[in-house]
Image 1 (cartoon, rainbow, N blue to C red):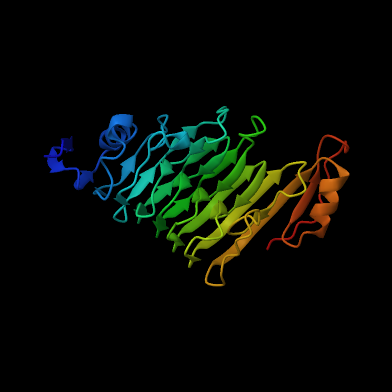
Image 2: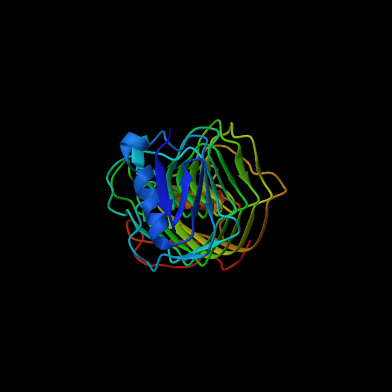
Amino acid sequence: TKDKLYFDGVEENYHHEFIGSAESLFAFAETVNNPEKKDSWKGQKVILVDNIDLNNQPWSPIGACNGVTYFQGTFDGNGKTIYNLNIDKSTDTDGHSSAGLFGWIDKAGATIKNVTVSNATVKGSHWTGVIAGYATGLIENCTVTNATVIGYNVNDEANGDKVGGIVGYMNDQSAGLIGNTVSNSTIAGNRDLGGIAGGVAASIKAMKNNSVNNVVISYSTPKSYASAGIFVSGRTGYVADESNTSSNVTIDLVVTDVESLNAALAAANISTIYLGAGEFGTIVAKSNKTI
């Protein structure tokens, strides 16, 4: 017999949990983040039954960095909205740090769907996204609006990379990213940024019908191989198909040396180049176009 939890006075087995309050959502996160119970959610389903305001209370992502704990069931937002998500993992030094509503989603069968997150501030140092930091599975029909997502360069491993509006990084074996929307948001970091995902493995099954609208993406790095894209960075070589749509998306780059400036000038999808510190002493704008 499986253990039972009590969420909002509703007693259910793990296979069908209902969450309708901030207290319940925090309690759910706590159980997932218990290493002794990390496998308890495999194949199980969690459903939001009401809008939830987290009131900017510090949030610990569901699933820890480096896969110590993870979620591998189905989380169905049921069309409900989570407001005022506040995550600050900006000083994490671990090269597997992950920040998001879910930090780590593992196994191909894991699914996050039908969740809206409004007014989020998510700060991380590696895999950083509003819905998830690191994911293997499916993220479908999720919406992020009025969000600020920032990846901080802490050290050579946790260097503010893989930053996205929905997910930081989507691993191989994943079903993919389908029907998600990011709007009225700012995404910033060191390298490898995207309106939907910072990076995705080339072997994911699908990245389609996603939308990015009224979003500013800004990245800054001396590395010539860094990139940012409307939907996903080009770092992993994945190219999103034409079913993905966008409007009013700006991609900005701050460069600090001649090598990265030349690479930026050769790129086709950069709206504005800023000359920052380092070899350049002033900040100037190359252009002000929107793509």
